[in-house]
Image 1 (cartoon, rainbow, N blue to C red):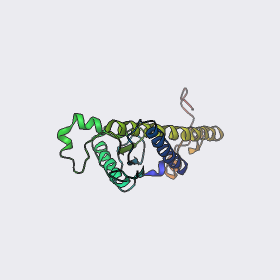
Image 2: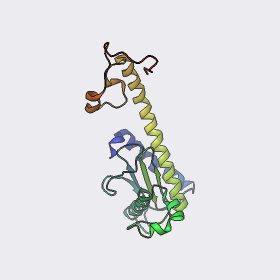
Image 3: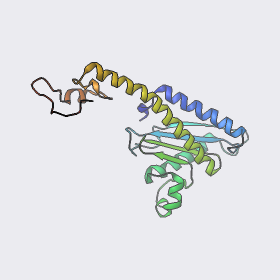
Image 4: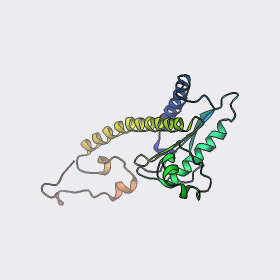
Amino acid sequence: MLNRLSDAVVGDIGEFIRGTAEAWIDQRFLKRNSFGVEIYVAERPNSTDFGDLGQSGLLFGNTLAGAEHDIDWYQENAHRKNLISAETGMDSHEAVRLWPGLLVQLEGGYPYGGAVIDIPYGLLIGTSGFEEDEDLMFSRAIRNCIVMLMDREGNEQLIDARRRGQRAGELGAERFTVVSDALRLGVDQPTAAQPRIPGQATV
């Protein structure tokens, strides 16, 4: 499910997490501790279908010497927060506050804030290891970074799609943003014998 993120974007996410954690800990915005981050990307935008949680997530974090727990402990906690967000469709701190009756019936949830969900972009990010409100702040920062990186890369791809459309004119599936074989074969391609309806948009 990570095929919506390029290798370059994944690398940038890792650098952002490492650099931001170090800087914010040094400035005492975050508790000095080991921490773990787990990220899921849905198969398509505007979706809460994250598949089999625990099988396809991105894992980040750090083990701090002398800390009570290591990175694995906190990545597991982040995963359990993500379970809550995936099940409820809301950030984990909101679900804990609003739906306690549901959460006590959810197997394996970790009932703390720190997981955020972005349905339009199909993102799920959980953080654990800092204070609860700091986990939330860090997850939101990661979400904003991923959206920025996807938008930056996506804008380049949209420009390319517009150029393809200009070259292809009104014919051919190349004028669309994503061109699969099914779309290429199934698209209606008007000909001179099939004029467009007067006033119909052509862009």
